[in-house]
Length: 253
Ligand SMILES: O=C(O)C(=O)C[C@]1(C(=O)O)C=C[C@@H](O)C=C1
Image (cartoon, rainbow, N blue to C red; front, side, top):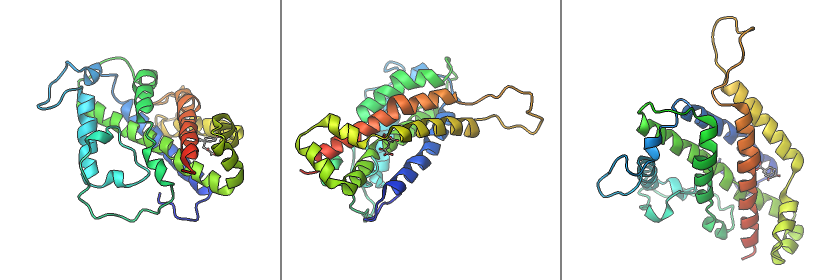
């Protein structure tokens, strides 16, 4: 979503709510395949002129190709391999200048990557190997991009909060007081609602649908709804808040 000057907290939250659907659909797609460990094993395959796993190969090559088509010109997008990106070949689009320019330098993809592969993935994919490594890595990329976009959206959330209460935020920013900033931007009640909503969405979007009488069948979900709630509570929202604090600390530069 492109946000113009009349940015409001409700609009920003609408985008976060819509992005929940994207994240849940991406997890459902990834859960079609088991873990497929060779996709992450550096010694499984060798690509000419490239050192790394099949997953790294797919992510880097896809990012490079998408960069030429202008993906990273959008301030809502953050690459996982920013050092390796070619220039865009498409005519520049005039994205509204909403963020403080210092926001560009904030990129939390390293911790998102580590969380996704080391903590999240084992919670929602089955063990095993079905050989579909390229398709698996492509699904991983979709999950990573959806998570990254959502978490870095914290920059827009922080900007709107700053504009709504500049004096309160300025005091904490000038004092470089991270705890005070964290308190100012945290809404416990909203976080509880988000966790409940994503759990419910995972039930609705990930249920098995059949034409028979489902009444007495035990409900089965493609991704465990409690994992989605935990993903938000333990990682997505804390990381989004970290992005907000870091953005605010640079907001007066
Ligand atoms: O909605 C907000 O105010 C946000 O800052 C976003 C968000 C979230 O990541 O969902 C993060 C911090 C708040 O405590 C509540 C929710």
